[in-house]
Length: 140
Image (tube, rainbow, N blue to C red; front, top):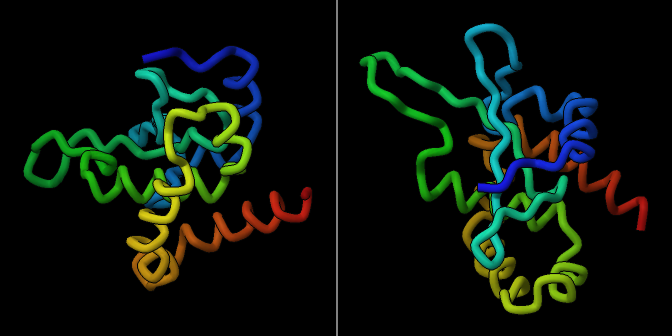
């Protein structure tokens, strides 16, 4: 696990998006710990890029007292990877990290999550991410 570089960490700290869980909407406060998680790894290392880091509430104890985290499922992990690729420029990824087939990864995740992303289940976060995409698309 690589630490997030100081410059990037400072940038993320200044962004309000990174102080609220992107899955549940929980805001960072005493008793609610928000961890920053990397969606993708390349060559065994986490990619330290803003598009690849997500704030996720680390729910330490559930109702029954068992350790449980929101991000401890394959479905959530893949969904975060899908959102990361939506935030990233896949063309640049193909150039910077050529050994992974980013287009294939995106196409697979898109088929799996396209309908679900706009469903009622993810309606609260899809609004936040649609705003992010519209901002990033307007820059191009």
